[in-house]
Length: 161
Image 1 (cartoon, rainbow, N blue to C red):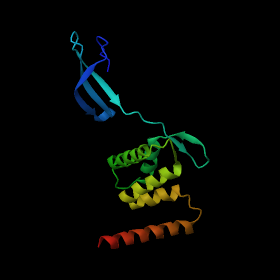
Image 2 (image 1 turned 45 degrees about the horizontal axis):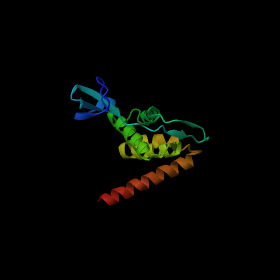
Image 3 (image 1 turned 120 degrees about the vertical axis):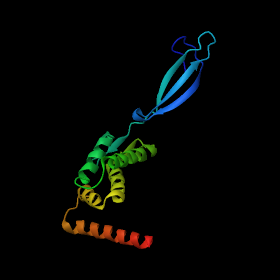
């Protein structure tokens, strides 16, 4: 790292600290030029690859975690789910998407990730989200979905016993 005082290209890191609110790393550095030896701070951030969401009509738009949060908030409306828990779900989904290292992800994949998180947190919110996300054409399809969900819950409870 180049010294901001003398321009020397050699410096050493004295201290590193993670800055939570900005998702940065602050590094305290010291110039290795014997005539300078001044200290200065640098900040590092992880470079995020831009991720595009492929919609059902094959159009593409930039990934926006706020849209995930809005969908989860709507599903959790009047439910005992804290905003902190919703933010945690959004962060988990965003990390999961970033960790795929893909530059494109389908809206269907994101929808499934949201449903998985909601299933763990609140069953009613999960069913609410699924009813909109899956676009049930009639009550029969919706009832089949609920029956499958109920069977899955019953099987899960049997496994816990």
